[in-house]
Length: 168
Length: 168
Image (cartoon, rainbow over all chains, first blue to last red; front, top):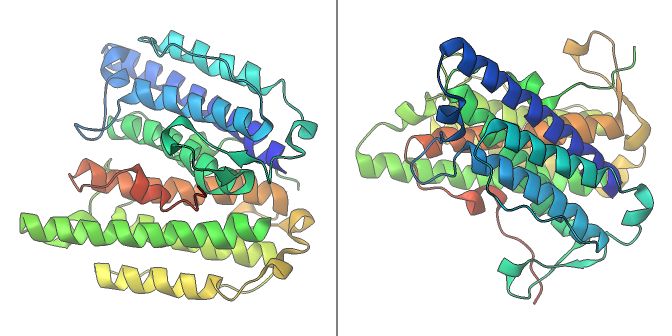
């Protein structure tokens, strides 16, 4: 279950984010504006810009999976300034996530999880996944989407949710 | 697991949304503006306004739980125009969700789920919960938050995530 909730679903959401970013590039091209304008946009002066939203979305995805499985996550320098570099970062996290399997999560539910900012406090893996990691990944990808939506990029909720495995 | 993923976590997120809406009221009061300005705000001309984001957040929460457990969800007329009415709606869904227990979800993972818009197509309960309901609830609550954040209401990610059950 944790594998599907995190590795599989986070990968899907990151692929959806990648497609949304490509739509932002097409929009910028059609408006003859530099994509940098969108990458540096935010919805409030004290909110992280689009670049940072993408960095955080990928960080939370990789670190959540690493912590739930007691593995090491790859480091990223947070030095992306272009859309192409953000896409490389997304792909690198997708590649990292692709190395996991259901078996890696056998002890995740009860594993004590901590993070540097928590100053030694812990959550169980179950609490961490449901109350922290999952809402956080969806928060930052929705925020990236909202920044673009606010600036006129033609994206809809289907882009955010991605394809559903419907059976007829 | 489905009980915690949906009933417990959706209830937490709806309570967080309720607190965020109260902060919007305080902000409007401090600015001496009608809260209706915020309730009718949106981030793009063809996006649903804040009222509708709250209505959808509650609808997806109640309907997801009803569908996963093959129960009936309460109907709402979508006629809220005030913050007080939106808070009543949130509370009514919290009350509905409070009537469920873990046992109601015994068959949820494999239950075929459909919705009117899907024209007879189905997802399994597992696919529906992970790929549709959970991302959707977090999407609309984040969007409500983003509309308020964009308008200057002092909310932060901690308001969105709510309290964590940290152990020291």
